[in-house]
Length: 111
Image (cartoon, rainbow, N blue to C red; front, side, top):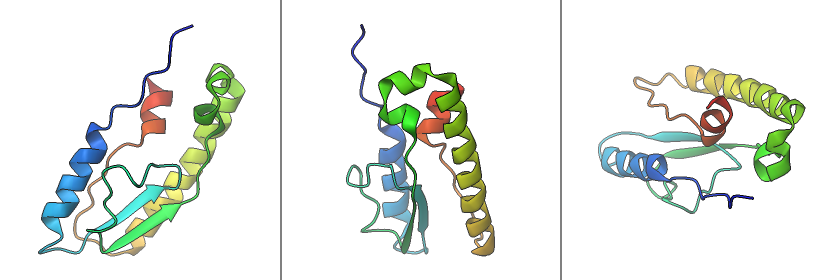
């Protein structure tokens, strides 16, 4: 059985650099999932507001869950509902610019 590899963290490092360099002259609000590793490449010290949305995808936390298509489908439906809520919150924020990174669950489930 192959050993699971840790996720590549390049997107989080890039986000941290964007936030760090933008905050001296701009307000930067971050919207993220609660399941994210907030300590790695932490953006909280730089962000004006850091919005965390509760999430707990079963198929990601349980390696066997990824093999169960019903669990994956349920996770994707919950994720879709949550991302719509986040999108509505962003739309109500009146932002001039929105910079969006895909989350690791979308990338993992859609590949």
